[in-house]
Image 1 (cartoon, rainbow, N blue to C red):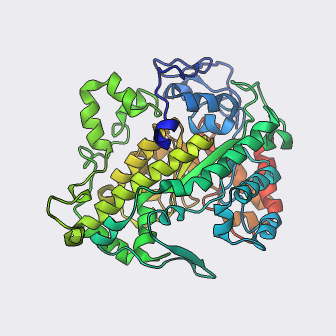
Image 2: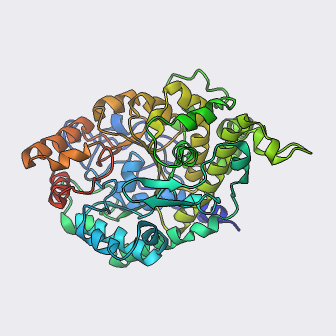
Image 3: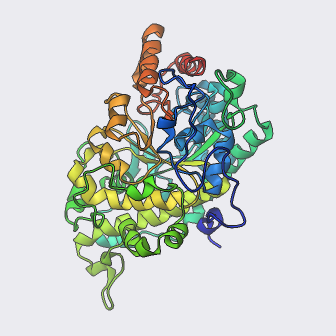
Length: 497
């Protein structure tokens, strides 16, 4: 049995979790409370109007995690006792504990040594008292089992020694060695075991500050969320093609434009955000494909075509050699192989104990909306739906993506990460509040005077307005020289609001 099969649980099976109290499996969740304060921040109760559009939680892994974790509940747009908080790059060079480890180990050594990766992950989560721990790893780790060597060069970042520029090179990439990445899942197992041993009610967030307000809807909600992650197809492809970081993505776009545009069938002119994924407004975002087919057999064939990024270019025709493949095949081949590897990689992490997967599309802001729809939407949608079939929510994050947010929502992700360039309330309204949001403090605000930092955090909480589905975070990662005390100040403020 594959890792994907091990991690997947079909709703209705013997392993089906009990539904959350107060939430029906056969319709929208409605928890009307006439005493709710519609203007209060981080309130423990919500109005019926705010919960009316929430999906039923009937995937075992999501339901189990939501019972004890405010972080996972927020990912699913369920009521929470307060806003959960964690930080992108919360384990990194701004922390003395991390720098002590780096004196003896390279970045890749830390990533590939489960004991050390787990230690770095745990130390940061406990030091900060956040609601979630993201496993210490790197986006480019899947490159090695795919046959693409890379290294980190001082002051330059990642360097890929043989960039992908042809269809033949794309065909040569391996998809059958994902087990070589199991060191990441072993680190997740250690992190999960560490926090499980602390028992309910003793997570870092609980120890740092007691919850305020009314009783939590489901238990204490202080179980630490554990986040696994992977890169998105476009971002990883850009690294593969450019050979490292880039400003203009010339080689990436040349290879992309040479291919036949890969739009999602039937979605070419879909600009109505309420209707692009109407099927997801009626049922859980965590239904497996098997469940969708059994409930809606009349549309299963059409949906499978919509959600699968397959190209005739992915396999050679009889008698055709890989070397003879036209260069227009390179992009779809690369997308298909990345989706295959990333799906298996995410499945390993979920099987190890990750309750959420974040998909990083760091460089997708380099695309116009037209190019995003033509070349990135379909493979990203397939990857996100594949991960959701494992029973966990998916956070989808990119930088400089204000113009892409409605399209990114079409992937069906559970949470959209927002950078700091657009006000949170405006971005969320653009998305019709049909998805949870994460963010979006400017990381450099952590260098501001205490009163300025306090005001900026308060502004974001005000913009969220206590609506279910907000996770406080930065709009990008913590930078190396950030003062730790400023990060701790933000955590204290979130917990006291």
